[in-house]
Image (cartoon, rainbow, N blue to C red):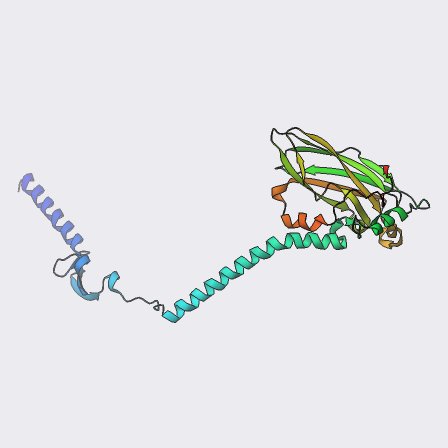
Length: 288
């Protein structure tokens, strides 16, 4: 036997073995049709020389295990979604209303360091009588008042107190000033809010005249001085919680008018200071 015939037999045997191995894992659909158009059919597979037949169902024809949604279920889901929307809208409404309501509460009670506004109308004789009859307590140590200022990020004003500190007696009226300047080439209307620390002293800090809660409109690059006329209620000395208070800080922050809730301005309109009449003059205050 020559080498050529031997080599031919070896090649023929290798091809036969490779074909036999590959046929052990061949599977094909009965009828030779593609699965895209088939119904349930037999699938034959060759393994170890045996033929096995089993029933198969294409995936797209297998029954769903999820229950179908009935009309009643759809109605329940719609009702749940509607109530959820109402709850969300109600929460938003409450959040918007809480700001002016909280501010009014603080103004009435002095809670959170909010300054008290003198109870009588500034146009009534009782108001001026109350201010005139307020007597400075010279027998008690004075209180140091510190003045602070700030402007919101959207407010292009320079806003500073003209005095950093002042010393006043309890019951003594005092006058301080703040300065505001518009740093832009457009007219801007601003509103100032205020606060007192420590918070517990806010109820005794009475504002008589103030630029706060009144719109202040400055022309381009205009600069103005704004007064604050105030006194510390003599009842401050009768409150044991005030025994450790020797320094009170009065802080103001200016905002653009459109950034402040109009309800706050409306609530403060009645308490805004107005010039006195000739028959009821306000006593001349001393400068702080």
